[in-house]
Length: 365
Image (cartoon, rainbow, N blue to C red):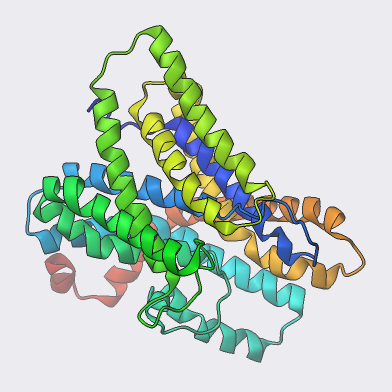
């Protein structure tokens, strides 16, 4: 498959779009209104899961030699360390903003922070939960848990995973959710063994692996300009149908299950770089959009849950623009802090390590 390591600018653009859909979906926290914007915007999480499943398979093809356990450890460690500064800073910002808006005392702040550590330790989805400062983090930790289980299976038998296990697990998990709940939400529903969000993560990651197969098949084909135009129309049509359906009054949540295959098809086409959309977003701009969309996702819930408490006299229509502006500003602050952390953090950690560990121990590590 061509351009296996190239970043997809169009995927990063849709990351931002679906992050905004999730923000607008959570705007129902601002006021009790019968028709909030994008009631079905939570479908954006499925997009992120599909993309993560696709990238997991692509990463496995580049993984260095070693035992399955070591290769899985390297994959998850790289992923966790890459996201950790943004996640920790986002958690701290959410905690500070929540405390400021709710005027929490230091004792309450400290107790809530301690109870929220279970979420940061990625054990929330196993039932060991507590206070949650930043609820959207469920997606990230459910994803990491799903990949912890699925990545070794992919390394053990790539073809068996891609051709048999991944599609089977995707069908079983989505079928379970459809039959029992007729919806993909709420992610916080307890299922006696884990939260519903973890089942969603397994389903989405596995379907993302199926997208990898479809993308590989598309990448091997040589399309005429007319065929590329048709492929572009299908790609954009799938995305637009999902976005419009997220804001439509469909009354029944089971329509979310019809949107997931459309997303899978669109993601496969986007990653194949066979449509004309592939050239629209420069890689550098796409990279920034991807980083900003993640920061926006981490920065919005503290405002959605608490903005109306400090502005009780404003209605839903007045609160939504303020909510979006506050979330975007917080995301920019988060990106700035992340940049400082990545610039100066390694040197500070090395200095701390040298001051705390003996020279011989440092060399052994």
